[in-house]
Image (cartoon, rainbow, N blue to C red; front, top):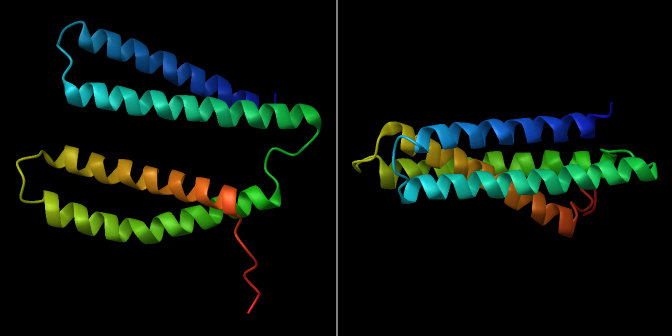
Length: 137
C-alpha cells in the first residue's frame, strides 16, 4: 500500500473519531461560538488534507513520485520561515494575551494554531511562487 493511501486512510479514520468524539461531547453540553470555530477549523484542515492526499494519489497513478525534490524543498523552506515567524507570533501572543482572563491552555492553543496557519500560508506561497535559486547573486 502506498504512502498516500495510508495517509488518506489515517485521515479518514481520524476524522470519524473526531466526529464521534464531538457528537458524544456535545450530546451532553451545548455548543458555543468557540466550539463551532474549532470544529470549522478542523473541517477546513481535513478538507485540505483530503485535497492534498487525492492529488498525491492521482500523481502516483500517473507515475510521478509523491514527493519530488521541489516539493521537499518547498516544505523545508516553508517550515524554516514558519519557525522564524513563530518567534514573533509567540512574542505577540505573550504580550497581548498574558494579562487576559484566558486559560493558559487557550493561549497555547492560539499559538499552536497560529504556527500551523503560518506554515500553511508559507507552503501555499512557495508552492505558487517557487523558492528561487539560493545561489544567484
